[in-house]
Image (cartoon, rainbow, N blue to C red; front, top):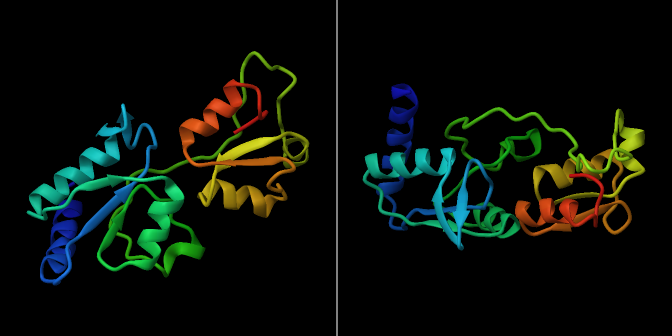
Length: 174
């Protein structure tokens, strides 16, 4: 853990010498970022980033934004830190990657009360309606797999909305 924190402190000190301030953006993504009543209050990634910023003595406020907006800001503006983001070959050259927060495995999820919605392969999944967050890694991957917005893919602004779509029966999977 000390090696990672030292790396961030060195990288962080580079931001300190800049005339611009460091902007930090993220989204509501439990368990990495936890939001209660519109306020970022916890989560494993949030607490780690907050601690690193404090140790590096970088004064910045972590902004909670919809994913698409956070990603657009991080893509277009200098001195922006974004977390938690899936590292892909497509994104790799556009950002300076500081540290790996976690390893994720992706699966389809449905309600246990809907036993008819079970998928064993991509062909079966394509016959169902799926929800994902707009401009997210998941949404882009689903589109590459053959899902089409408005046909069998419904895009949302937040992960909470994505899960609500499943709970309300508006989509079969997420």
